[in-house]
Amino acid sequence: MKTIVVPGEKLSSETRFNTYKDNGETFSLVCGVFSENDKGGKIVPIKEKYIPKIDDQIIGVVSEPKYGGAVIDINSPYSAFLPTKREYKHYEIISASVMEVDETNNPKLGYEKLLTGGEVISVAPEKIPRIIGKNNSMIDAIRNGTGCMIMVGRNGRIFIANGDIEKAKQTIKRVEKEAHKSGLTDEITKFLGEKQ
Amino acid sequence: MSSNTDVQLIKNGKRLSGRKLEDLREIKIQPGVLDNADGSCYLEWGNNKVIAAVYGPKEAMPRHTQNPLKAVMNYKYNMAPFSVEDRKRPGPDRRSTEISKISGAALSKVVLLEKFPNMQIDVFVDVLQADAGTRCAALSAASVALADAGIPMTSLIACCAAGKIDNKVVVDLDKPEDNHGQADVPMAVIPRTEEIVLLQMDGHLTADEFKTAMRMAIDGSKKVNEIQIQALKEKYQGELNGD
Image (cartoon, rainbow over all chains, first blue to last red):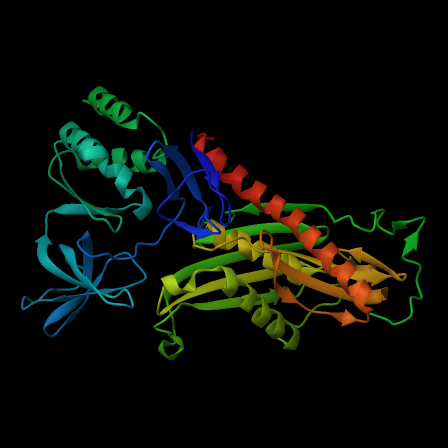
């Protein structure tokens, strides 16, 4: 059963993220969708800004090439720095992983790879886990259904190349919109099958 | 605010608007009305009409305002020139600067600013139509808009004013009561803990009257909080059900 919780609302079961504790009771910190199972509760916020964390795979756009590196726009209030010898140009798209985050949340990137010959779409960062699905089930379904090479960044950017790009975009937007539905993976697999 | 009540504001135990002493005006809250803001809320409180928009967290500018320990809360209260009977000269004035400062401080109490070092959270509230109690309406709307923007906060803030008219303590004063009453005490509280995050007073009250006024304002705030929660739930439950 999924319910909407608001900031300060008391939760019926122990929940780890987006909550705080007061007098042994758990309260919600955000406005979000609350669901619970045997292991405990879970809150998915209705809206969220991407805050970089170590080991996140992200897709960024070069916003300021500099000597010895580049400033990367990672779809977050915080901009990232990529130390590299390669000279990047404005608006080039890269995938990278977050190597370190300092105490003011400013990330440093590494293991970068230039992405060419595809399209980047933006989705809400809080919907990314749903787009990937349990054990990659959703993203694999979209990959198989469209024949696209799809790369998902934790920061809400998705790179799509080869195959039926339009269809992949359409499907991802649908998943984003209907993220709260149960049994969505089957529905999407069916939807992709029908269109072929 | 006048020391002597020259107008009779309470007749047969009822106020001019027909309300009882502890009744609030009708409140309507609609979150998420603006597409271009991260969070927003439109609120009608009696004849008050306010709209709140939240942007952020985003990089604090100018850079010298950045705080590496927490985000900066930037609250702007503004009255539209057409919000009052005589045209109001647009732009900030002493009154709106004061309200912006105290309301921003009230919100800073519940928003988890430490989560966003070097950032700023902008809250803009515009009063489209004023009918006494706009700072309460503005802060209640801002609190819903912040929740709508997905900003982590320990609780919503609810506001309500109490006051004294015809030697009686009442809750939620409207325009004639504010103009001809004896006191006005706007108050913002964290509903669960009853912590007071904003308290001002205009006029005179005895210690006992002040205690009664505080109790009434807290109870009024709790009613406002219920409406806030209901508005947020209705909006997102609708989306959850696919409406």
